[in-house]
Each structure stands twice: as structure tokens, then as C-alpha cells.
Amino acid sequence: MQIIKLRVNGEEVETAIDPRTTLADFLRQHVDARSIHLGCEHGVCGGCTIVINGKMARSCIALAATMDGAEIWTLEGLKDDPAIVQLRQSFHECHGLQCGYCTPGMLITARDIIARYGEPDEKFLREALAGNICRCTGYAGIVKAVQHAAAQLARRD
Amino acid sequence: MKPGALAYFKPTTVTEAIGLLVDGGMDAKVIAGGQSLVPMLNLRMVAAERLVDVGGIAEMKQWSADDREVWIGACVTHDQIQIGEVADPSNGLMPKVASKIAYQAVRNRGTIGGSLSLADPAADWLTTTAALGATIEWEGPDGKKSCPADEFVFAAYTTQLDISDVLTGVRIPRLPPDATWGTYKLCRKAGEFAHAMAMVISAGARSRAFLGATDGAPIRLMHTETLVADFRNWESGHTALVSQALEADIADSGREFTDIQLWQSRTCLLRSIQMSLGFQPIKPEGV
Image: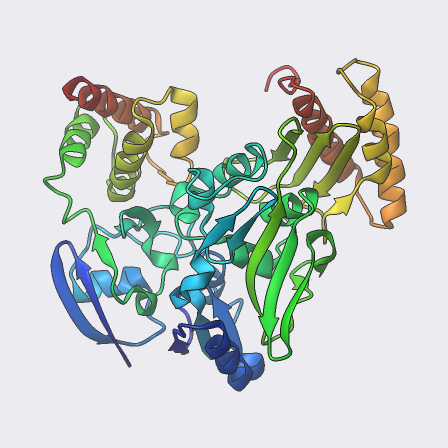
């Protein structure tokens, strides 16, 4: 067992873990961060996307042991983040989800895209979203939702 | 889909890391960003009884630059190169390449040293560092070593690194300000590993051209380089000349290419050459 100390959604967490534990399993089991959805568990589906030290990352292909001292945000902790609030509304209005399994990863990825690129065009957006797999919507609603949110947030700035 | 049992160590110096690797022998592996290694551990394609995390070694996260070259520590991420946090010796080639590696969430953690050490033939940095004439540096029980990037890889996943060696950084000479480049890779889906890749750099009367995403090390295209060095413009007649040169280069390499791989490589090479001459790559209809 190994002791790690980190901040998750603003709270200090210190606990002993088995070094083989992935960050996704650690966060779901020890911090109850169940917005983290495990799809592929090898880094291609995007369902487990979170924010590590200010940068979005996949929690299924990070080991919890490597996170000593890290600052982590999951969708739970970002519930009042202005971009996430707008994205949630836009996904609702533009039919950006059906079953919802990919949605937490989509929201965190969309937040990152908007922060980096503002209002990207559809071609760019589809490429930037290519690392998040949705098996329900066919992506049209998701792309519309992210564009809608980006436009709303840009208007506010 | 979970890794097997392992012991985890996070040294703070390269010397300490090498000591831990020597003690672990064949069962020890270096982990940096983990964006290839952890998926392989999850899939149990790789077993490691001991992981040595080089992410705690401060000097490996750094970079430095002078007017001749840029040194990039092995633990610098693709994202840092993409967004220009690291000095660019390549007139924009490296940020462009970085921006097309996998997905943003992966680029944020994956490192240039990790990518080179693993040496997946489709990894972008193998071809890029070879094309830029970079030097790969590493350290092991026998001390510090280095070699030109185009001699670093023997075969797929097989490099000059010995089992207890740690890749520490890459030294990249600056391109002349008027040097131009072109690169293209074929992926069926944005972000996946490429099926074919080419890179061309032209500086004055000299060119360097490489194919990547082959069955092994990147292939240097000497006939193509001689040909491209004389191009000042793209003309339709060049297509046939490039095809001939490429076939001669592949014959020289002694490597086997299927018809599909040859077509894919030629497409990437033609688009790279066109791009290096200042043209938007010409795309076939319907794409």
C-alpha cells in the first residue's frame, strides 16, 4: 500500500492505495466521483475525462499512485463552473445526449475546447471531439450544443 | 482491464532512477506520462512488477535554448510543445506535429521522451526527430550516451536503450529561418495511430525526407531528397518523378511494402512535398 495526498474538487484527500489502482477507480471508490464513467479503460472513449493540475486528462490511463500532490477536478466539483453551467443548458436545449454515459466526458472536453479556442467552426470542433465516443446521438446534437454554449459564453465576455 | 500487482517508485534524480531500474532488472519499467504504458498495463499486454516514475525528476521536465539548438527534457508533454511553451527550433513543424498526436487529453500527459522510448513505429516524434536531425540522449548504469535520432530505432518497439537506461532528453538543431517543411499522415479517424506518414524539410539546396508509420524505424528517402532539393515549384509532372524516387528509396531500404502501404506512403509524401513548397496539399475528389 502507498499513501497519497492530493486535492480533489477543493478537498484535501489523504489515503492508502494499492499502487496498481487507476485514478478513475480511486476517484469513483474513495471520493464517490461517479461522474467518471468507464467505457474502454484504455484511453480511447473519453468517458473518464477529468482535470488534473488544470489540464484535462483521462483518469483510466493515469495511476492514482502518480497523483501525489495533484489538484484534481471532476464534473462534480465543476457543477457551478460558468462554462459547465452553460454547457449543461445547451446540451439540454440542443439534444446533446440520449443515454448520458458519455456526457460527463463530453462536458469536460467541451469546456476545454471553448477555453482554448473560443468559438471553433464545425470541422475543427468535430476533430477536437474525436476522442470522446458517443454511441447514441450521432454527434450532431453534441456539436450543436457545444457551438451553442460557445456562442452564449462569447456573448457574455 | 486493470493492471496487475506492481510496486511504484518515484525517484527525484536520474541516478536514483537508474539504481531502481537496475535492482528491478527485466521486471522494471520506466513510466512518464503513462499514456501508452497504462493502457498496455490495463490490457495486461505488458506486465511490470516495478514502475519507476520519472515524473518527479525536475531536470527532465525542463527545456533550454540557444541560437544554435533547443534541448527538450524527456518529460516535456506534447501539449507544451503544441502551445509553444517550449522554444520551437523547427519553424512551426514541432507544434504542428504535437497538435495532431492522439487527443488533447492524451497530449496533456504524454511526453516526447516516453513516445521515443516506446518507439511505436507510428509515433510522430520518431519521424520528426529523425527528419530534424536531432540527437537522442539517455543515461544508464554505464553513464551518458547519445545518438542521432535516425539511428535510435532498430525495429518496432526496439531502440538503442538498454533495460536499465532512461531517455533524458532530445537535442534539436534550429532550422534556418527560410527552411520550409511539409508533413502529412493518414489516419482513418482523427487521433488514432497513423497508417502512413511522411515528412519533408527543405533548407536552401538541401532537403530531408522520411517515411514514418512503417513496420519499423522511419525510412530516410535519399533519392527523393535529391529530387526535391531541385524543386522550386509544384508541377503536375513531379508526381511521376516522386513516385520513381520513392520506389527506388523503398527498394534501397530492403523493407517490404504492400501495394496499399506504398500507395498510402506515396500520398503522404506527395502532400508533404507540395506543402513544403507552399501549396495546400491537393486532395482527391470526394474527400
